[in-house]
Image (tube, rainbow, N blue to C red; front, side, top):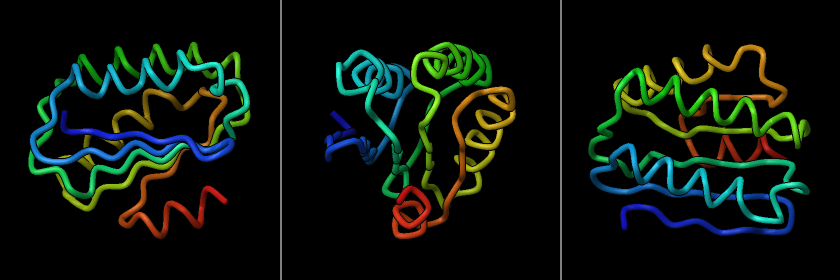
Length: 121
């Protein structure tokens, strides 16, 4: 499994490594949003800094954005940080952010985990 996740009080951290495919991102998102702790979550950090390749289509990003937008209606107070320093993943993160321009969550794309942690706190 090229991802791990952990809960720390009202914070969710997902870390992806190696080659990542759509189903892994969707699975981790479903775990996050399906957990009872989701309602109390204030920040979530999705770390793609150790990824070699992400295999996901534009259509997949649009689909995930729509699902997350719906989830944001039940918890409007989430800060979502996406960590990536690779241009290819940054393009995907920018698309996700653009698709969620009306979302209730604050979204920031960060170059480092440290930057994301500081922004989330």
